[in-house]
Image (cartoon, rainbow, N blue to C red; front, side):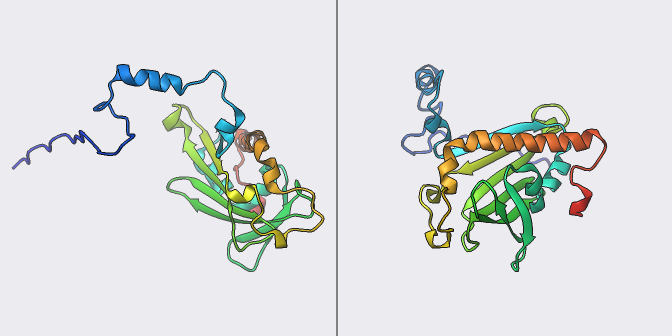
Length: 218
């Protein structure tokens, strides 16, 4: 016996103030609102003040790009300044030098999800008790989102309060002249440069028929 088809789901009113839906504001009424939200030029702080996102197309398979990124040691290749990776006594926790900050040790733990192809780098300068700098990355299948082979890598950072003021000043080298938050206004450009490093490395290896993840990481 065939079950009757379920009625289409309709929610006429969510009963929450400040929610704009076609049920309570017409397209004609809504158009001035979205036009007012659209600018020809946007202030830097408005776009990159609280969140900073960069993205890039990579002509290499998404599963290979994900596998490469999910190995913490890949940061030694494609980032601008993280070098000299060493394992710590804690599982999956690495320490390295961040050479953009003099005398700076940076701790990193990578949290990856293969099903969603997300790679989150949990990091902090100077101490490993609170890995508050979170670099959120996702590798998309370009065949699905752009209808062509390859990957799209999306990378987001959130402006944690510790970027403005070091939450662990006692762990900082006394003679270091900079703090990581000093560079926040350059995060977009700096991260885009690094993402283009990632693109160049992945595309170069894939074009040569080599695995994106090098043999030395095996």
